[in-house]
Image (cartoon, rainbow, N blue to C red; front, side):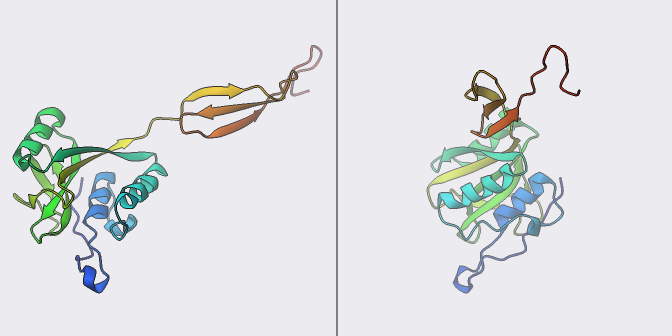
Length: 186
């Protein structure tokens, strides 16, 4: 995994939003530049997570989220990640050194990269996010769609079958029936 420096400094009064979050996603995916990931920060509340998740879903990925209450010391959060998920990179978001929400990449109990500097940092976060939580996000691959139902509503001839998979996608397949004298390719 390569360390990356964010390209946008956070200046909301000037209409510029920091891109630490997309920089973290780019690192976890293995991209060369943060610009390859859309800028989600300008969205509000759950819109940011939903937009990021939608973009990742198109690539067969998603983020698994874990919240720790803000009263939890950051060392307890990162030591737990070290004990239970050693070696797995994750995004840890809290309040950064500049007093705004900030996302960083960690492995175990060590900050791998603070996108503000593009380097490892011993103390990139000074507290939980402004909603009172430490946010941990782990990049995971989505499972292949699983077929869990089908509909034979095309009638007794069974000329079509509809399959609904885990994601609610309906696939319609044509069924070719063999007669006793000829195969489907005759």
